Length: 198
Image (cartoon, rainbow, N blue to C red; front, side):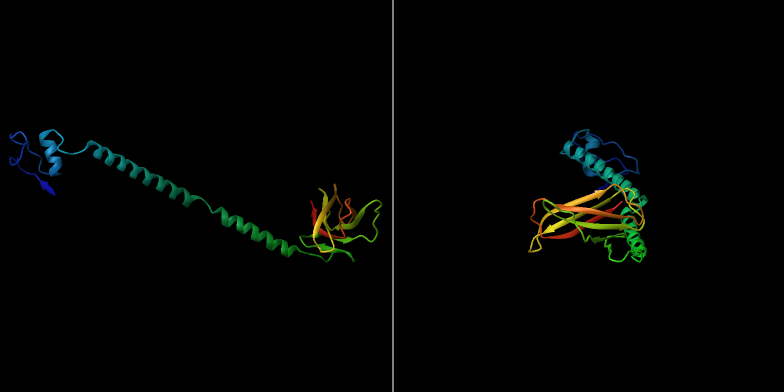
């Protein structure tokens, strides 16, 4: 309930004396009028006023933080879409660059990299345990090394062990032969699992 005071009010006073005159442009509530007039608190809890002040400060603070976050988000480029664009472009460019026309007869281009081709070797030099060899060739070379790994399978095509081999480098169109040992002697068949030309 609002009360606009333009003249002195004598209707209610704690001390029964004349109330001061307010300027005509001030609008106040009855409760605050009583506090002003009597100079004392008539039931207004100071904790309530403190809570209001804290709420005002918290509200202003949250608005400022929201504004800062909105501005920074609006000015930050989207890294997710740019990363996805890079991945998509690299996939497209790799697909366009896939070329197995250079692969020599008897070799097969590796599914993950058309720069490298491989085949199982016809002769293996195994003495005390099982082994198998594979030959590799690279169109552009592997200047930082060639790594290959196989899975050894049992009669049920279950992987029972693995073996790997590497060389420090391979020139363009140079042949390399790597040997994969089954020291435990539990593998019956070999499956090429990884070829990395770096």
